Amino acid sequence: MNGTIEISHLREFPQWVKTVAAWHHQEWLRSFRAGGERASREEVGADIREREHNLRAHFDTDPIPATFIAHLPSVAEEARVPVGSVSLVFYQFTKSRKPSEWVTNLFVEPEHRCRGVGQQLLNYIETYAEGHGLAQLRLYTRDKAAYYQKRDWTFTHNGLVQGNAVSVLEKRVGAER
Figure 1: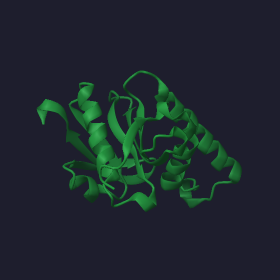
Figure 2 (figure 1 turned 90 degrees about the vertical axis):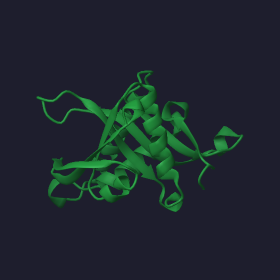
Figure 3 (figure 1 turned 90 degrees about the horizontal axis):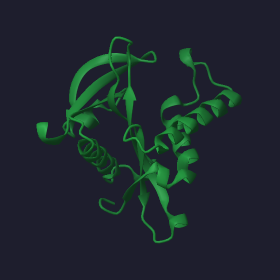
Figure 4 (figure 1 turned 60 degrees about the vertical axis):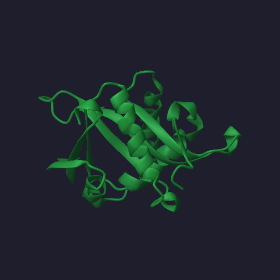
């Protein structure tokens, strides 16, 4: 599949917000609450609506936050199919630290994995960040540190995010690499 996808800003395809929100919810939240308690249908619906709202905030013309969608190309816009996403956001984990740029929401539909889509999305977000004058990106992951390290991301430390143990990685982008 390498080379057979296109990558576009989510704001160009607002009809995909519901799809992307559902991907993210299913992949990372899995309908559970703290302590492993299963969320109710109403809570899941509220979580997805909140995620949709947050994704629509990426439609602004500011460079960050931004979400990009990998999709199968087609001349007819309605025939295009989203297959993955990646976002660039500001996170501020403590009040004493200023917000910084983080890569998040790297997701590829299971049937399109191991075909280079994730790598293309990472390359795209790195080029986008460089084009907006960023020198360094960060990300955290619960279980994919090896994936990112193979792609020249550097492990910096272990941490906790929303009660989950994570690995924090960073990558220099731009001329200062």
